[in-house]
Image 1 (tube, one colour):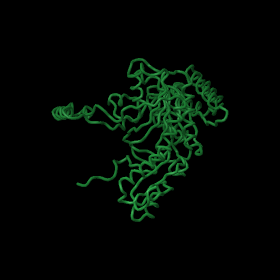
Image 2 (cartoon, one colour):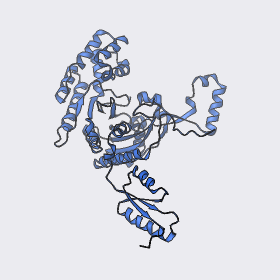
Image 3 (cartoon, rainbow, N blue to C red):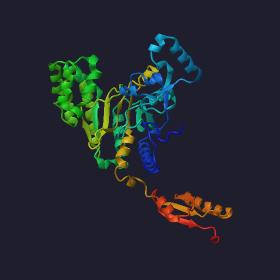
Image 4 (cartoon, helix red, strand yellow):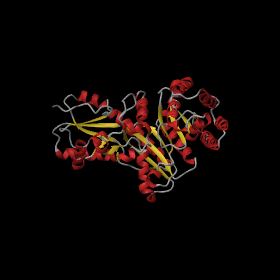
Length: 433
C-alpha cells in the first residue's frame, strides 16, 4: 500500500514562506516578553492522563488525544478487558496512562509544583509550544497548534494582570496586529457566581448557566433569556439576571456601579479589582490600550478563579487570545494554593489573519543572496568560495550556495519567489581571484 502524502486530518504541513513569518513573529513575541522579565521554559507535550482529566480543562477534556499503554502493560489490559464484562463496560480508559496536552497552563502548574524551590519568586514564565485538541478543524482552528503563553506565579495582587495585559498588547502591536483594531475584554469569575446568587438561580447549575451566558455575543440577550427559560428557570430569576446585565456601562465607573447593584462583598471586591486594572492600564501616556468590561465573558476552563480576559477583533468573529487567574491549580499538585495568572496568544488565529494580508511587510528587510556554482568546480576553488561565503555570513548576510542549473534564468526566477534578490555566478573557467 502506498504511503499517505497528506498530513493527518486537522494538522498541516507549513511551507517555507509561512514558516519564515511564523519564526519572525515568534522571535518578536519572545523579545517583547523577555523585556518584561519573563523567563522561557519548556514542558513535555505528553502529560499524565490523570492530570489532563482532572475536570480543570472544561470542554477541552473531551478533546484529548490519548496515548495507549505500550508493550506488556497494554497486553495485560487488553486481556483483562477481554476476560471481564465489568472491565469491558468501563471502556478503554484503563488502556491509557498519558495524553497530549491541550494547553500550556496545566503543564506549567505541574512544572512549578515540581520545581518551585529552584525558581525565582514570583516566577514569570514564558512558554511557546504546540498543543493538541481533537477538535473539528475549521478556519484558524487546527488539531495541532502553537500557543504563546506568559504566566506569573506567586503574585496575588493585580499587578500581575496589569503586566500581562501590557506585555501581550505590546507584543501584538510589535507584530503589526494593531491595524486590526483588537481590544481586550475583561471580567471577573467572582461576578459570574455572584450574579447567579443575586438572581436566585440554583448554584449547583452554575456551570450550565455560564455556558448559556457565554453565548451572549452570538445569540444576544433575548437568546440567553429564552435558553434559560427553556431550561426551566423561573421568569423572576431570569428577570433579576437581566436587570443586572442590562444595567452596566463600560469603563471603571461602570464596573463599580455594576458591582454595587449586586452589592455583595465578593462583587464589590471584583468590581474594584477590574476598575483598578482598567484605570492603570488605560492611563499610560503614549500607549492606547483598549480594555472593555463584559460581564458575560466566561472563559471555558474550569480552573479560573478571578480575573479573566480575552483579545478580540470584530472582523474575525472570535477571540485571538485569552487567559485569567487560576489560584487553585498548583494546589491540585501540592495541596497548597499558589496565586497564578496567565495570558495566551492564539498564535494560529493571528497567523491566519496576518497571512491573508500583506504579511511580507512583517519580515525584516534582509538581503538574501544566492551564489550559483557551475558543476564540476575544482575542490580548491570551491573551498575559496565557501570561505568567502563564510565571511559574508559572519557579517550577518544570508548566503545560499547552490549548483548552477542548465536553465539559469528559470532557476533565478524560482529563487526569487523565496526572497532571493541578489545573485552571483561562479564559473569553473574563471581566473583565480
